[in-house]
Structures are given as structure tokens and as C-alpha cells.
Image 1 (tube, helix red, strand yellow):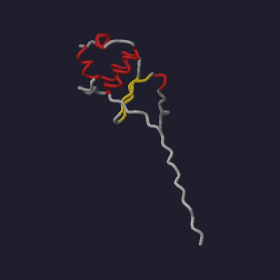
Image 2: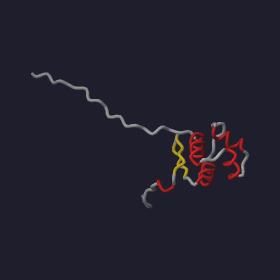
Image 3: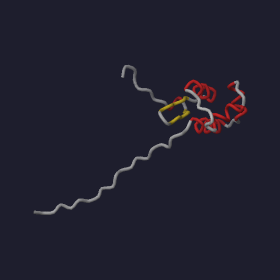
Image 4: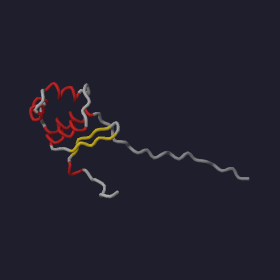
Length: 99
């Protein structure tokens, strides 16, 4: 009886996008917009310390707060378990209605 040779087939690894905390997403979006924490706070009607606390993940913003920050920066907030993104609204594709 022939003995079958089994070869190890390497697993295809898919690169996963690095997950972001809310603070990392806020900081990256603010820096991409080229504004300071003080300027962002002024546009939101907040104190600079609030923006700083969110960026350092000392405070956790809710979806409404992320939406407000996104609106001020001209971005859309995408929140999934363990990941937050502030992205260009034109890049967001929604599933067709009724699905």
C-alpha cells in the first residue's frame, strides 16, 4: 500500500486592519484636519481638557459624541465592537435598504 505524503500547506494570512481606540481615532482625525485640541474644543463648545481626556482614552465617548466630533471635522463615525473609525463620508457604503 502506498504511503501518502502530506505536505504542509502554509495558511493564507489575511492582514487585519489595526483596531483603534476612540481616542486614537479622534487624535488621528484632528491631526489630519490640521487643528489643535483647543481649536477642536472651540468648534465643539467644550473645554480643551475634555478633548484631551477623550484623546488619552481617560473618558469614553458615546456614539453621539463621536458623531458630533465627526460632524465638526467633516467625517463619519463608524463604531464596531473594539474599533472606532472617523472616515470620509463618501467612502462609506451602506447596504441596500430592505436587507
